[in-house]
Amino acid sequence: MNPILGPITKSRRGRVEMPAPATTVRVAIYTRQSVEDRTASGFTSLEAQRDSALAYIGAMKSQCWEAIDTEYTDSGFSGGNTERPALNRLLTDIQTGQINVVIVYRLDRLSRSLLDFLNLLKYFEQYQVSFVSVTEQLNTATPAGRLMTSIIGGFAEYERAVISERTSDKMCAARRKGKWMGGPPCLGYNADRENKRLVVNQSEAVMVRELFDLYLQHRSLIDVCRVVNERGWTTKTTTYKNGRHKDGVAWNKARLYDILANVTYIGKVLHKGELYLGEQEGIVNERAFAEVQKILQHNSQNGGASTKNKHGALLRGLLKCGNCGAAMSHTYAKKRNILYRYYMCVTKMKRGADACPTESLPAQEIEDFVVNEIRKLAKDPDLQRQVFEEAARQQKKLTPKLEKERKRIQREVLAKREEIKRLVTAIGAAPGPSDSLAEHLTSLESTVAKVERRVVDIDSTLTEMRGAGTMESITEAFCEFDGLWDVLTHSEQTTLISSLVESIGCNGPDQIHFHLHGSTLLQRPNFQS
Image 1: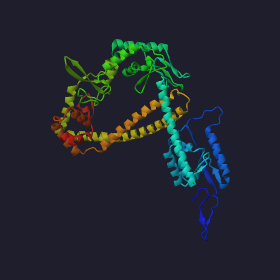
Image 2: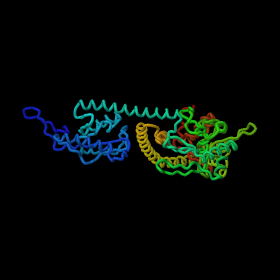
Image 3: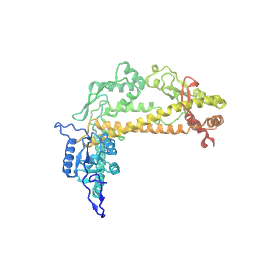
Image 4: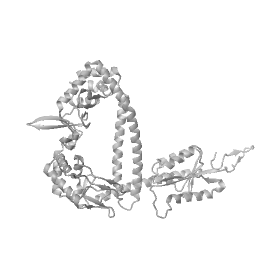
């Protein structure tokens, strides 16, 4: 059946009879623009698109075309994907048989992605709905129309890719010239948004120089934080372009480190590992800045290689503070060539001795204690069953939470990607650096990467939990632990403990929580060979 002309029939003599026009051909007008239109005249691009479509429908009155009352308008949505509310309503109405023809002003108003566009055409064809573009004179009711539609869709996708690449190149070129790319200014500077550059805030500049001087004097992030917090100093108070106000907060190690390592203060710009001369005026002496960097690097315990386990911390990442719940970080001290290892509360490390009452724990003693507790499991079947049942309860309780978190993160990623695409389109249309848009784009991309890593972690955990062993296999595995432990290398012992144990509170043996799936690691060939 042709949705425009109606069914084609044959006469009794076998001749094809041209169908009579259908009573009414219901036409849906779809309009879209990438950025919200705020023109003073009040006449928007969306209205222009709709007027053109209505004129086309008027010319088709002889075919009984009639525009339906429902408006399908997406304002501020990119054409690079199909996650648009009005488009989704249009597809739903097509599925329920309310529409015979979809008309747009121009093909890229429907989609700028060739793959998405072809999928939409396939969807229209499935429900016998024709697609018409006003300016390109395309009608998918004909083979030639379908061919030209695919060709133009390919050019629309190419144009979108070129805009994205051009935007990236423009941002890189601006950074190499030392230009400020927008975003909240750091402490010591204000934003001159009219000239798109940073200007020195003299009162804050004094504070910045004092922070550098204090660090050169104390050579400790914690000590400097304690001094400035006692003075009542806070981080920068910021008023954003949209009027939102953010008050300053107390200093900690991370916030202070960001200040001390920021090359903006010596009038430079860092881009992809390279330093360029910035347009902003420097407020810190380069010699003092270089000396601070040497001290920061010297004070770093692991030289930036946080993934290494140089001194064999068996419970790294597992031990939790019994008072504040923070992680217990592995640290050490050397006296007369003797190494003393400890686990210290991260809260105390960041904020000073008064922040948490938990004392440092001798590393070897707590590690031996945990290993002995696991050895006891090998000799006590009742204790094994208790551990198994408790772990099973915890994992049964955890599974729906992880699945719910995964769905929430996926929705968040989808929303962030939509925002990224809208920002790329807006930046690409701007004549110069777009204030805070570029900075916001970088922040969004970093957020998406972080939450996507969390999805991978959740999937891995759920997979392991679904493959959890039975009570019998876990009992057998714990029995193997006692004889196997002493023949493993230290690296293998660390891997085994982290796989068996989920977390350890520093209050006592009742605070050791086991993974239900972790004990199956004992049965793997690489640990039994």
